[in-house]
Length: 283
DNA sequence: ATCCTATCCTGGCTGC
DNA sequence: TGCAGCCAGGATAGGA
Image (cartoon, rainbow, N blue to C red; front, side):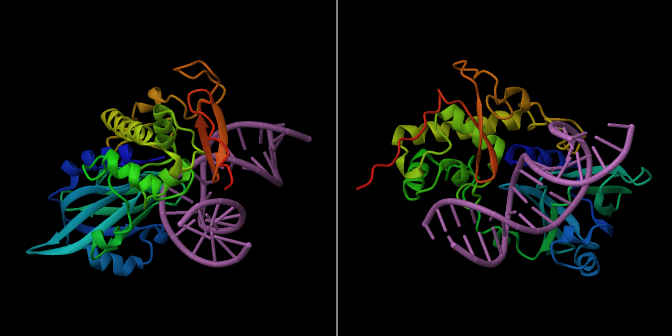
């Protein structure tokens, strides 16, 4: 599932392909993709606009739009499970599962395809306002070990669902949370208010190193779903230590990786490297 | 404040 | 071989 590293890869590959191009026409084949606007009013907002920049916030892809002289709002995209952006030549056949297409002024077409139809591409006047509720970027300097320790202690939630909460930290999903917790030696059910300062530091380091490595490898592709805009798979799946490895030996200690369900999410961990939390004593 | 469940979707898998 | 039923999973809403 596309998480921060996959979205970052999409943004990097898309930038040189679309920045400077303008939108001549839009074709909507699954209106819910637009998240509220009708195809007609969506088309009115974006037709004639030019892509000024492509950037990322959490798992969201933001396209800044301009018209001659003035800003023209933003497209805010989310890939969810199976969304994908890709460019094609105007004469090429429309790919399967295409939900939305932007015909550009150089005769190329930017397609948003999405088998499961959960993805969204919304037009908004103000992207920062739309995404204001998101937590800090885990690769920014604002996300420090000290901040993380304080933030963990200020809540009382299990680490797994807390790290998946985009309002706590933006961009982590099921895969990178499991991988980060394993690298930090922290059990997914541990209560956030019981994480020590050294453990917070390990978690901080683990999150940044996992994300950094995954970005360098252009994300993770373990099924047909995620491909970069250039159509290539990522390679970080070869570095998974726990995700999808239930029953296999832990790469660090050899114990069998376990899979449990936490908050309706498959959760993978090593029972030896990630010690079960102690029951909270009453008092 | 935190937790739990349902919803949106489809392809792929399991079991009969 | 065919088919019904279940599952994954990000975000969000509503209820406990």
